[in-house]
Length: 461
Image 1 (cartoon, rainbow, N blue to C red):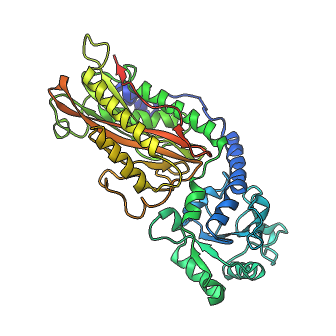
Image 2 (image 1 turned 180 degrees about the vertical axis):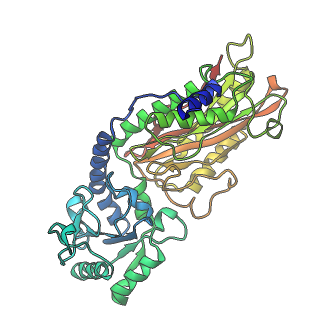
Image 3 (image 1 turned 90 degrees about the horizontal axis):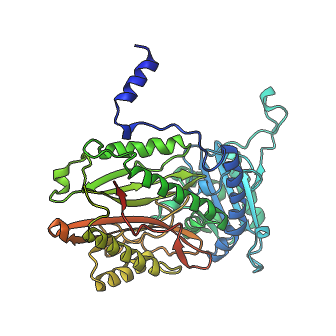
C-alpha cells in the first residue's frame, strides 16, 4: 500500500475526536510579525524595568556569562527573537553609571555590553575582537571574541568602571537566579582576581524580577491567548469532539496537542484530561477512561505564543438524557472553588511573600468552611514562572525558600487551586473542582483576571 493511502486509512480508523483538523489560521500573525513585537518588547523591558531593578537591589554592575546550549535562565529575557542560543560564549555586562552619583535610574544610566554574540537587534553594544578574521569566510570583518580573550575584555570593562557591587546569578533557592555555571564562575574569577571577585554578590532577586516583569503592551496579546484557550477548551468539551461511550481522555489530550500545533503554536507541557464519576474512584476509572454521560470533566492545558505561556484548568459536565444543566450539587461545588479564587486573588498583593499570602488565604478559606488546597505560581516567559510560590499541593503550610520571595507589580499569575465538596446528587460523594486561571498584577499593584474565570461548567450535550 502506498504511504499516502495508508495514512488516509489510518486517519479514517481513528475516532473523530482524535483526528487532526488542519487549519491555515495564524491567530498571532506571521512569524515575522511576531518577531517584530517581541523585539519591541525586549527594548522596552530593558529600558524600563532593568535600571530601577539594579538600583533597588544595590547592584551597579551585573555580569551574566554563559555558553552555547547552557544558557542562563535569564537569557530568554535578554535575547532577540532571532536568537535561539548563546553564541559560543556570550558575556552580558550591565553597568549603572549613575548609581554612584545617586541620579534617578533611567535607560540612559545603564550600559549594556555584549562580549560575544550580537547586539540582539540593537539593545546591546556588541564588542568584537581586535584581530581580523582569518580567511575569506570572514569577509573582511573583525574576528569574534574567543576563549580567554573574552575574560580579558571583561577585566578591562570592570577596571574601567570600578563597580562597587558585581551581581552574579548564583542562588541556592531560585533556579531562575542560579544560571552561572561552575565553569564560567571559575573562568571569570581567575580573570578578575581577588580585587574584583571580593565584590561579587549573589544577584538573587534581580534576574528573578526581570524575568517576571511584564509590559502593558504584552497584556493585550496575553488576553488574546486567554480567549483562544477558552475557545479551544469549549470546543474540546463539546459534542463536536466527544462521543460518549467512545472518546477516551487520551483522545482529548492529543486533540488539544494537535489543534494547538495546527494553529502554528506550541504548548509548554503535555496537557491532561481526567474525569470524576458518581460511584467510582479514580483507581476504578483507570488512567485512560472512556468518557460517559454524567461525568465531570477536568482539563489542564496551556499554549505558548510570542515566548509567552498560559496555564488553565477548566471543568465540564456530560449531560445525562433529559438534563439541561448540571446538578445543583455540582454547581455548588464549583461555586465553592470560585469563592476560594476570590479569597486568593484578594490576598495577592505586591510586597507580600508567597508564604504570607498562603497563610492569609488558608485562614480565610477555613473560616468560610471550604475544604481546599492552594498551589499558585507566577507565569509569563516560563509556565512555572519566576517569583514566589503560593503553596504546593503537598506543602500547605508554606514552601521554604521559594515561598519567601515577594510578589512585585507588573507580573502575571496563575491562580491554581482546588475545592472538594460533597455532592448530594452523588450520594454525598466528594467532588474535586480544580481550577486555574491566569491573572495580571498591574503596575498599580492591583490584581485582575487576564480574561475572566469559569463560574459555570461547560455542558456537553
